[in-house]
Length: 148
Length: 130
Image: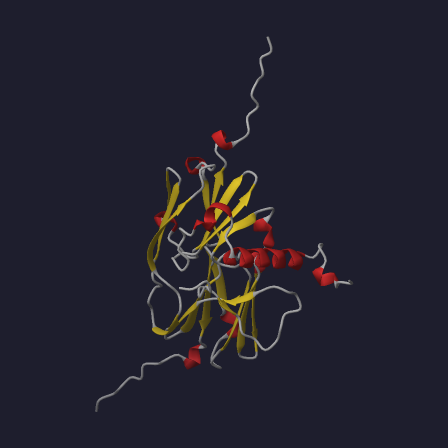
């Protein structure tokens, strides 16, 4: 089958399309631990959880937060994110407002093989990204064999 | 809420993009003061470099791309939102001083200031009492 250059692997849009499709299909069928149904879709803020060999990345899309009001905490296997977005300056006449404001708090429970206490978080371009590594205990260890 | 996430609305336009991929309409807040129109748009994941704002005739168009790079070799295991480009257009009132428009983006929020030319700003008329 001949495919256009737009769909070939070298095209950056093809990569974006792959990501979008992957996000879409995972929305229908979460895999592994996250398939247990403990999660609340429709809870604010929306979260994306992604994995690779080193661990997982938990992402929240929350633009315009007051940076000093963002908090990311871990307790056992749970990560709790809270933050606040102040209302605009409120000057002049309001024509439309579709933007949210106020405080939020959301907890995510992670599988046992991850170490939330070792997590690192950043807030960039309005996205909170928390990288949670695989715990030391969950990594494979070589056991020495003693031969007598 | 059902599986369909109401968080993001896909952008409605008459023209389609050449490149594939989803495009969403950002949420906005629009205010008007005596001397300007102010617009804020939520564009999570967007930085200065991937932002394109243009004014043609009296239509203001906001285009913003998100990069797939952030996703590297990550496999989604649980997701509640999709990522995509943002696009939205607004028809502006005639009285906007196009040369004086300023745009800033901070923490994924675009702030646009569209000043009104001085001649269209409200003017206090002095009343003389005789």
